[in-house]
Length: 348
Image 1 (cartoon, rainbow, N blue to C red):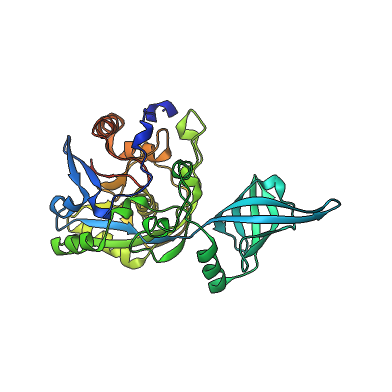
Image 2: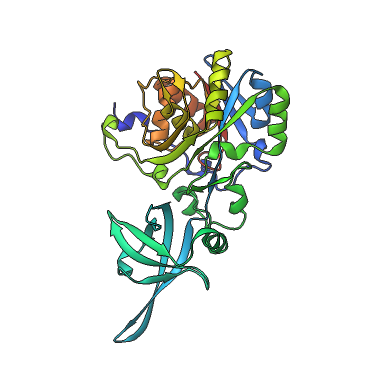
């Protein structure tokens, strides 16, 4: 299985840099029973059955992008360097793993100032990543980060425009409550209060799980034999309540449809022998063609990058040739791609 099997040509102008407004007005490609139908996300209550259950990721994106200054007193006086930081994940020791650019401009033990109230010391570095210790902790840190930080937009958006205040709303789901992600579960960005109310009225069930999406979701696959790719690990939790709701739905003959690849990866990580159970920990599950799905019956997801692990996941669910057909249709019909783009409902 080669990396080139998951490649396709995408016109640059189909990469969305802003979401649809309102959220639920985005287009929805509905692929089921061999057909493809062009719809709008607001049609979900008409498509789904009252016995279906959506699984939603309630992670909350932190404003993990910081811009600061490193000051250094030398023989020639005070020098400054502009430093860009993207937080990756907190460490048990109370530090943060981070990407620092340019890392070579900061020495171990030096301080980077981000605002009058927020700064961090570079305490170490491993494999090109920095370890930072901030001057604040707990609620004080969260509040200062909210004021100083920007949303960590994906590279393909950040290359076109900087993050702004609008993104603090747009790049967050309406049910975000467990802070820790540095990328949004973007399939869920299409839901607004009106759509949720319509789904509830239809009788569609919803269950919440938490998977803190990491920056690794944007890392390219660098091996030609995709089966040798090593996935990044992300922390997740499936509560007893969510596991029971999913089990009850399956037992009653309903379909389990995760919203987003993050929710799908998490519930498959929590399932053994066809039975899902409460689960918490780091998952590096890698889903590619040949994977045997244990609990997933469908997927609502955005359109993904060529040669990405997410293309491999949807190909595992739908079949490689079927995915090629779906993506060819999406490009011809000019669907908007990636995090702020349109959506699809994939039922194998």
